[in-house]
Image (cartoon, helix red, strand yellow):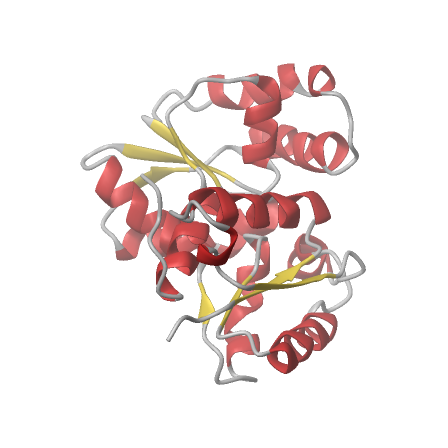
Length: 232
């Protein structure tokens, strides 16, 4: 029996739309009826995850739980969160439901191991994701070598994510900051685009860099979980 996907979204809205688009594009079907049923709760009022982790900001779990309950009521068979930083709160959310959450960092780490064996990943993510060790732990579990940006590069990344993509700015406004981050991490052989705004930034900037897109990897994971084939 085919299963359905629940997207606990809004973190941010454009990243949520990107995940839905990738689920559709990566499902191997040439008819409407061959695609996965997807329920989306796109709640952009969920409190900022990085602020909650680093500076005592509002706890996002109550709002995330409200979204979870709505997706459960719809009948979702699995839950996906298109926000890497939100995975810091995944253990608390999973304890509230028997519906399985599929982990974006774990899916990305598996892809790193398969696609770039013996290479070192450069983790590009929000400061909350980096300080919480979300990707470091996932990569260690797959025996993937990694490197993380220094504080100056983290500042630049936060500007790209928040003042650039989330703010809807033109790509030219954050091109130099994004490229400066890559230049400060010469030890990286490839990149993990570990914030859901970063694949959008790379696409908008038309950059050709070796990278793992966690949004794409979790889309593939969710499609297969639901019993559907994926495109190459």
